Length: 285
Image 1 (cartoon, rainbow, N blue to C red):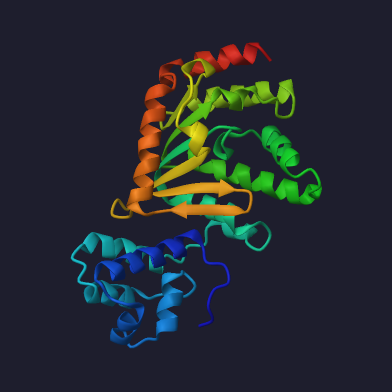
Image 2 (image 1 turned 30 degrees about the vertical axis):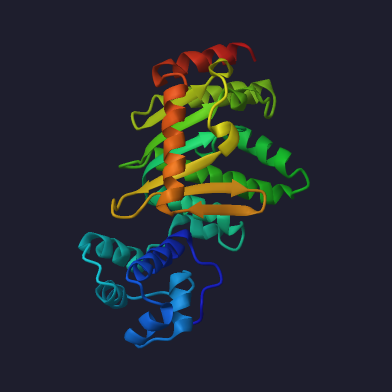
């Protein structure tokens, strides 16, 4: 089977977890490949998410690596054998992989923690706000390309109203609500939407007022933290830059962002005050 050109976020995660198990076993890729009657090149492709791997091989690797965590192995098998075609695949080859990877991570997450310092997170944007924001970020993009990105963003938001939605917790800097994206009318509609979403029982929205002073996200910037349905899988931090996305899954890295989230939640205005804060800002527009 030819290697994949663009592995999905889920396929990359599977490869990363298999590599972690091999490293914990103190085994080289060459040694693992030999025991699996495979090649070093194929093992490298599996660990990079470029090549598929069967349930049998996942379980054999787990045994070779002396992994006693049966629930973890079951979770990895589920990742390897899930052939469900996500809705985001409709956009593959049309939009950059990073947009689709974020959609896939959101779909499989049971808990999302989001920090935003410059704009409303995509999951909470109105169509008009998203269009204005994307247009400002790339004013020379063809209208069709911008509309595809807006459509993807609106499709992502369906997870907020699906059956068994993920728990979503968002901290936004007050700056986010002060940037006049699209003009006053667009911002008023956007704030109305935030108030509505904030009333969902599985969504928590906090505002970081200017008056509360400097905070950890001023240095860290915007980021997402994902916790997955299979609790055996570690959390992942998603960072989006100008030249692509970065995924952090090493425990030492993730714990830094988790601690920053905890500090942000403690420093931001309590969630019970969010609607009043949003309403006050709306009146100023």
